[in-house]
Image (cartoon, rainbow, N blue to C red):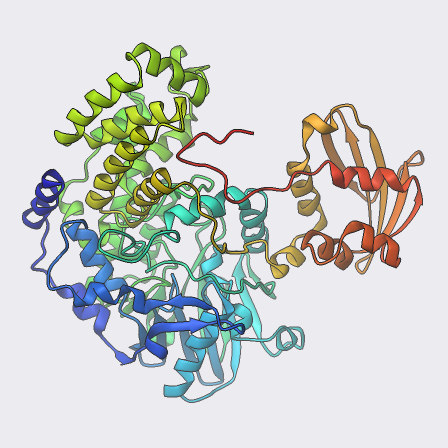
Length: 630
C-alpha cells in the first residue's frame, strides 16, 4: 500500500544507510562460495538447504517496496555464504545454515565450534573447509550453547566412535545437555510449529515472502543429531588446552540460552561471545516460545568480558553474522550491545514501577539515538517491543494488575460477544475496510481476529485480516515478525497446509534424554480426562543401563520414582532402554515389542498397554490464526 511505502521510505532518512562498513566486514576474508550454488541435499537426494533461493536479493537493483529497507540491508549481509578467513588460523563457513560453523587451527589439530543444525549442512561446510585448508585431525568440538543450530550437525563432522575412543573431546557449558534436550522435548511440538512461522519455512522466498530471519537466512531441514559433551565447563575462567591452544572459558547462563559460554584464545587474541553480541538486537524472548531470558544478566556478562578482554582482543567472532576486527571497534561493539540489553531491563522496570503495563511500556520505550543508530542494535531478530513485554512478564507475570483482565473469556467465546457488541460481522467489516484504507493495519488485524474467531468460515474477514497482516509484514524490520505476519496471512487465505517438518525429537535427542526427563515428557502427554478414573502401578526394570522405576497413575496424573519398586504393582516390566526408544520413535509398536520378547511382563500386561493408550499424540499442524478446537 502507499502507506507502507511511505513508512518504509521514511527509514531511508532516519538510519545511516551511507555507512557501508558492515558490507566490507561481511566480505572480508572471502575464500570460496558454497558449492552447488548453495544447494545441499540429504542421502535421499532431497534438498535440505538452498541458499540460491535468496539470489533475488542480490539481483535486485533497489529495495522492493514490500520489504523494510533496514531488514533488506540485513538480508543482503546474511546471505553472503561460503568459506571466510577470520584471522590467521580461524575460519568460518557462513550461510550454509541459520548459524556459522567455525574452524580453529591449532598446532595439534582443529577445533570445530557450533556445527550447525543438520548433519548434511555441517558435512558440506567441513568439505568446503578441507578443500582450501590442510586436512589436520579434528580433536575437539565446542558447543557454545544449548540451541539446536549449534549442535544438531555434529555427526556430520565427527563420529561417535572417535568421541568414545577419546580421540575427540566435546566441550560444552554446565547444564548443556539438560537444556538442549528439555527445549526440544517437553514443549517441542508447539515450539516447532511456531518456529515454522518464525523462520518463514512455509513461505516462498521472494520480495513478498521470506527474505531471511535476521539472524541468518533460515533453518535447514536435514538430520538433527547430538553427541553428549565429554568435558563440562563448570566455572568461570576454566582453561583447557585443545589442539595445542589455550582456551579460557566464561559462563553466561540464562542470557541468550539457559546454558551458554564465551571463550578467549590468548595466542590468537580472539574472543567468541556466542550469541550475546551479534549484529542484531537478539531475543530476550523468542516468538517460537522459550523460557524468558534475563537482559540484566546478559548486560552484566558483556560488561565483565569487556573489562576482561576488551583491551586484549583483536578479533571478536560469533556463531552468527560476521566478525568485528580491531581492539577499538570490539570495545565499541561490546559497549553498545551491553548498553542495549541494560536499557531494555532498566527502563522496563522503571515504567513498571510507575504502574504501566507491559503493552503500554512496549509502546513507550524507544532507544536513544546513540543506541538506535548503531546497525548491530537494530531489531532484525528480537525487537524492543516484544523484549520489553518479556522483561515485564519475567518479573511480574502475565497479569497486569487490573482485575478486569484476571479471568477473561477464552478467545472464541469472547470474540463472539465482541462481534455481537460491535453490531455484527458485516458492520465490523465495513468499518475495518475504512481503517485499512487509512493504514490502521494493527487495529484491523486486531479487530478482525475477533470476527475470524467468532466465525472461522467468514472468508471475507479472513482475507481482509490477511491483507492487514501482509502490510504489517512488509513494514517489519524484524525477520521473525515479517515471517509471522506473512505466514499468518497465508494461512488465513489458504488454510493450514501440511509440509515436511523438522524432527527435533530425533533419535540422538531421544537417546540422550535421561529416564527422569523422559517420564516427565510422557506425563505431559497423559490425557487427564481419559485417565481420570484409572489407577495403574507399574514396576519397570531396565537393563542397559540398569535402572529401576515405579510408575504410578492416579487422579489423572503420572508419577515416577527411581530406585523404588512397589510390592502391590499391577505388573513388572523388564526391557532395555533402546526398546522404549524404538517404540517412541515409532520404529516398532508396543505390541510388537511384547510379542518379540523385547518386553517381558509379569502380572497384568493390559495395565501396561492401557497406560500407553492414555497418551496423546501431538499434531504438529494445529491452527494458529484460526480457532484451535478439540
